[in-house]
Image 1 (tube, one colour):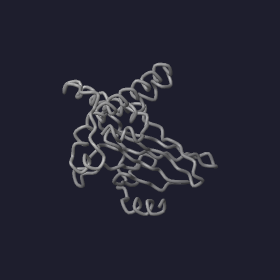
Image 2 (cartoon, rainbow, N blue to C red):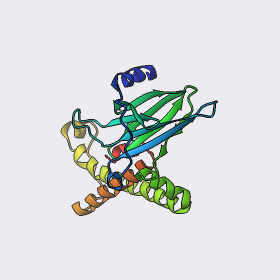
Image 3 (cartoon, one colour):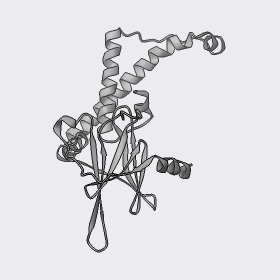
Length: 215
């Protein structure tokens, strides 16, 4: 299965055009992600790969693209999910509805290393908060999980009632009456909270089945 995935990813890769990597601007924070992978050589040299995701959708194909730069020059590009072969392994990139869920260097031995976010990117700023204020960072992380759990959990609980009333389900399993009926404005607020929770987790490249339900 892994070989099949790698072959599919390889077909999505296109050669780069050699253009220079543009600096990240502050107004691009909500839309652009930029990560780096420095790879040292035995002779003391260092190769720097950069993964740039300028937007979530591609005007041509409707899918987001990842662009790989080698020492500041456009080396390759691919629709997401992407798997770029590089020295000693593969750079794997995947995206969710809320941001990145994977941007890792996987070595030929199977070891995984998350790429380093640009300090000026949203992911880089979140990483700096975690380094400089670990207690505050943990509190925000816990809050994002709670917002996601409460928002998704309560909305699923209420959705189960109308779903269970569908004739095929009601006849074979029975109906379910939700113990909770919240007003529309509160359900909307919970949904917004779940989105914020998933977005915050995406800044740390955290993704689970719970985040998938949050979509």
